[in-house]
Amino acid sequence: MSAEPQTGSPESAAISYVSPTVDPETRVAVGRIVLPNPHGRWEPGMFVQVSIAVDHAEVPVAVPDAAVVRTADGPVVFVADGTKFKETHVRVGRSDGTRTEILDGIGAGTSVVATNAFVVRSELEKSEYAE
Image (cartoon, rainbow, N blue to C red; front, side, top):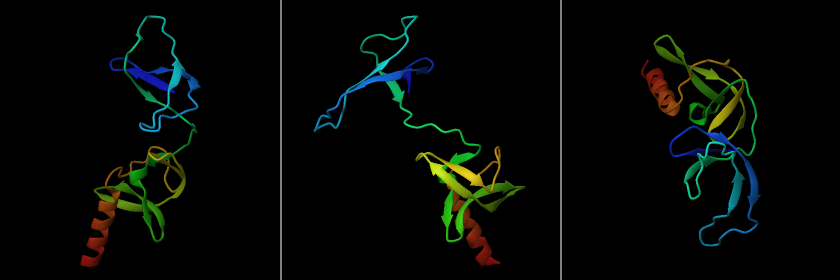
């Protein structure tokens, strides 16, 4: 888990306690983390932004979920090919809801259309019908 004060750099910490009950109205549960504080950076009542990693896996290639377009022929991403975009079939693996693992089809460092890939696909399809 990492915690970051409103100003400053992130800090890693461990969850030491999670309440076994959840408030039925707010759906909030109380938790506690243990943060190192050698410089007095953390003060009681301070608000922080927290990210909790439930599972972590290193993968050779991952792209934003929005870069993967599901087609009848399988998932594709769009790769820059000069001044155009090329539809490239990929084999996908796990997704964490933000990024999708790419098992085959493109290599690490390949630039893909990361947002609005479905718009690129529809524009390519329109141009195919116009020809």
